Image (tube, rainbow, N blue to C red):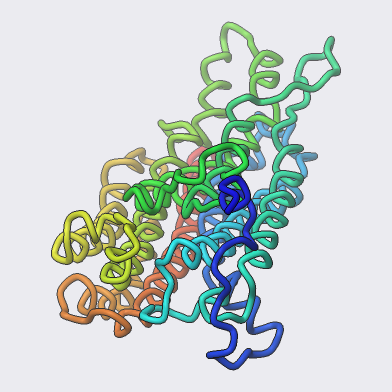
Length: 402
């Protein structure tokens, strides 16, 4: 038996038990593998990042006139497409790798997996994952190219930080579950973020911070804020111009810092989705050597973690309302930031079942999707609230100037 072949070729894995399960339609089979219903976790932070960008950088003020020709829709769509393709690639690779590593077997209590059920071969899901990740790289790489903002230089340059984000996102898509393909080609088949217990941290970082901050960061770079600042760099107005460009209209904090603050509840709720997923699967994960946080620290820890993540997401709204938007221009509009609290009644059944209740195993399936719905609604309402906060501040400023 060739060792090199078994570590690099997906088709070398065990043949799935195709004779045991009836095969659904072609569309349903790939839907089980790709799990498109989970894409809300990728779209939601992009929506929040877009709301922050429009609210703070694209306001119709004299300092933001240079942003009028910025192609925000195309940048937003490209970033959203990248995020969705990375998640699809991650899902497909997870479908493949969990099967070949033994985590998905006949005792699985979660939703059906296409490879585990024998509807797709390991090769099909592995190669589909590679296609999605490759397409994500093709979309993501142009976003790293930043046009020069000086009048004397017309060449573009590569943003090293964003290039790292693009490449690390692609690597993490296959390293989340690991497995022999494609990491076996570079001797990293034993690397696995999820199996080592770092899945929660990965989701927080990439589906919270990176996905939310990504779009505002792109706009900051592509709009050439440094160039605008230099253009208006007059001793009497340099300070106020910098504040206007980097700190929003009348705000005290920068757009990227505001994006970071918003990404915290977004990331916490995304992490809550994986927590309830791991809580459900902890019994089969133990047998497969998958050392998730729920496996390492037990059921009680996982339930407490879930409760804290969800509750702090809502508590952060109160903190933002009374400690962040404190200037006079936000006196009336700042309460719009509390709008996501409307979604809390939907979060209550999830909390009762996962954090405070005794549901376990397959009974938690509905609450994986339920938590995803909470996150998506929370982010939609947060986006609306942010727009209302800043539009109200503009109205207050205009009224004051009159």
